[in-house]
Length: 415
Picture 1 (spheres, rainbow, N blue to C red):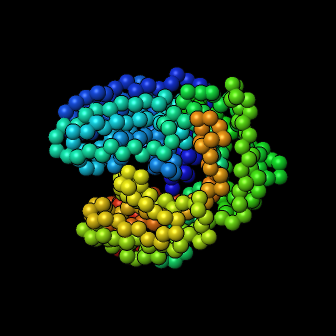
Picture 2 (cartoon, one colour; picture 1 turned 135 degrees about the horizontal axis):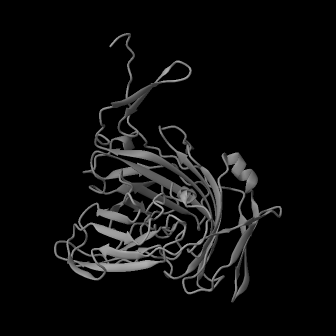
């Protein structure tokens, strides 16, 4: 779940020196770089490795890394000391092309931070590849990169493990959050709050060094989410010293999107990557003209390999769509991927209310399920790693194996 990852960011702490990128491989401005190069970012201090590296999804959210041209795909690994990120390409980079990168782009809701909780300043660079490939000059950003943002989100996230009805995701399935990020060129945002229906007010807390303020709550059930954050008027307020107090009213509607449900679950468990695959779902009932469908497929390494809509393919996904075609050879064989479908109800949207800032209000319900290609990936044999006697007299066995794989343990009277 993309938005739920916000809860993994470090808490409020003492302001410390902002981390800096001390070097990259390839070097910034490098030329004739191999199309199979590994990209490494090195930092001057230990970073918060609990924060995942998330690539921006144009039109939906701003991650903490962006690549140009669109379609450049990597897997990401923090070093053991937290002082570098290694980015391994999932295929060849486009040849004879300028590959640009941006860490912590303006508008990110989950900035890369130091271990002490201070955000990395927006950092950019590029390198030029050599021969053997093609380029793509698409700009995936829908708003100027230096703009700030403000938002109110209410969301539910579900998991589908059969052809039946999806169930709430096991970890933090429901959330409400409000956020504000100041424009890169200012003015700064010094304080923010959101007033709820009924008059209660929630204060947004600053994320040190990021220019962002955030309020996040994760009720345990849908009933608790609706009780705490009901239909009605939400008023977001934030203070900019040179512009005074900004007041943004947003009306959260009474009708929420349905929970997405994939209708060809069984077929998605045995996808032939050499053929087109049609992924299907029940319709987004009563969707309005401002509402959206967003679909994303992430491979076993955590890399996005398919998304719709996608401004840079281009690939459309109308709000009334009930299927999308995944082209041949988009997915790798013998893998278990995760596909997530979100129904987004936009109840507020503006690029003009506040200078150099865009705002959104969204109710999102999403469902994820496993999508398997070929055998779904090799399954390692179970390995016995330990045994201990519990206080109640029973034995506890510890085994290691492939996450998500099914193993059978047989009981015997003797060995």
